[in-house]
Length: 212
Ligand code: GTP
Ligand code: MG
Image 1 (tube, rainbow, N blue to C red):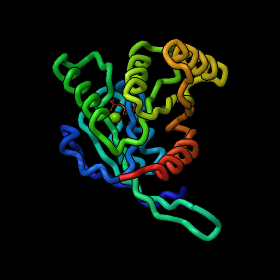
Image 2: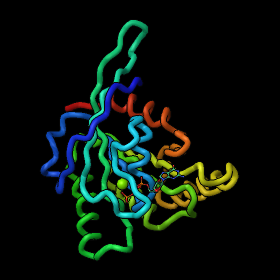
Image 3: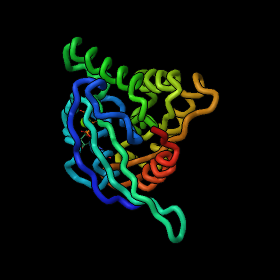
Image 4: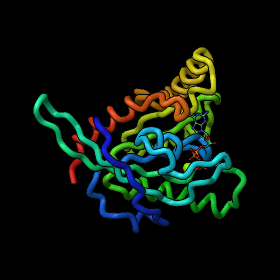
């Protein structure tokens, strides 16, 4: 896949206000501060497209981005593609009011239930941590809705190969309690640009399966 352009479309308070579901869409979801916005910027190669912050709770609405790319089908044929990326608020952020937290959870829940053009949820997991109940719970809930899911480990630059392998394996092992076949996973670092190709390859393949 060759990236051509990426731009911010708009922010939406509810899924019902989002544009018609006529393009393949990929959602980035995970705990507050896990690196959703940073990863989006890395993947589409635009530094400040999605707003990032060291303070959790930066993203508060459904933010849609549009990406234009070219995909090679054969030696002589390539096609232009347009797909959307969704940046959502994080879950599990303790330092906000209960009302706000419930509002964000409902926003994510509604989005997952209603967005018919959603191709895959990229479920982001901080690779520095031991398996967290809240991540497993979220991933299980996506599985129950039969939405395709990829587990994306973030911030891989922050730990050694050995620690990374240990945490990734522990997480996948934990998932075996609730999953017959554990979903695919990609290891990423927005800081070191790791995992971009795997993400784009996945999206390129998935785009071909999109039907309006
Ligand atoms: P909310 O919108 O608040 O839920 O956060 P988010 O998940 O969008 O996280 P964001 O991308 O804003 O990143 C949070 C913090 O982690 C920022 O300080 C980033 O610079 C840092 N960060 C994100 N990805 C990486 C990474 O791959 N490596 C390192 N070292 N830091 C990262
Ligand atoms: Mg964010």
